[in-house]
Length: 250
Image: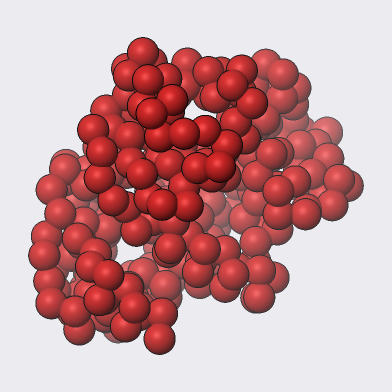
């Protein structure tokens, strides 16, 4: 139940890019709004909202922005946009399987934007289910290794029914069944651990191997998708190498 993940590297790069173009607060606000809409505006009884607020605070989002996003979710803000969650799937460069989680107030616009991006990259959007079968939706947690040792995290995760615990050097990641999300979240909270990320993610059942140039092409395409306003997360089934990550970051 151990291995190495490059997600933290990609996540840091993505966060920096989001902050630079001013999109991070928008994404965080939409996440808070949806969480409040689905589970109510009280974070003490709404785990998803609590985690969304924690993420917003960790990224220095102003308190008034957080409160406004909650009001939009609970319906107190009558001028709020009617956001909905949308997951699209397709094949990108080199036939890579791609899953895209979106939050949008205009489904047609979002689909058109993604179809254009896929087409320009030589890929295509697929019908629902054509790609999704290659992924499993899992609970995912990532936190600094300074907050908890790998051995302690492994013990906690096993008791909670996790599938995998990954030591990524600066961070530790836990992957678990969706129904174990709250159990692990509560256990980490009780242990004084504040995750950098906690939520649900699409995990590929099997990764494909490509050469360095091909991986860089795929990562650039993923970055293009992430730059779209309505895109929250992008998942793929490429096995990343240190060489490819170094080339991409360069």
